[in-house]
Length: 81
View 1: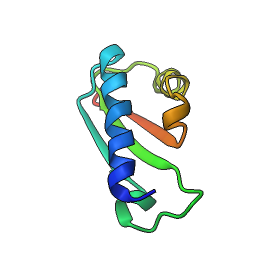
View 2: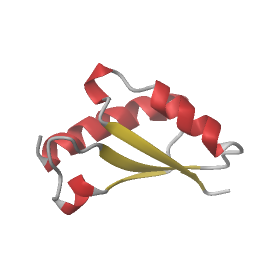
View 3: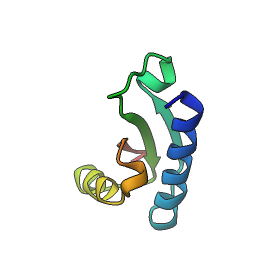
View 4: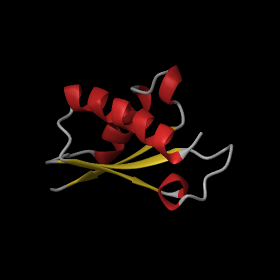
């Protein structure tokens, strides 16, 4: 998979997440962002939310939202709070 395909998968995932948890900002980082990805690379996404009280709980919810199409997504939630 190339960077453009990773971005498409990430965007679909962020759109889905945004329906349940309003996303302030999302950013691709890691190997796909740097162009050093390989066959086993995951798609690291920093996802910034407003006022998240329990970031671990949000992480679990984000992981559970992944579908078969986006299992390579590794969401990393952050809060502006």
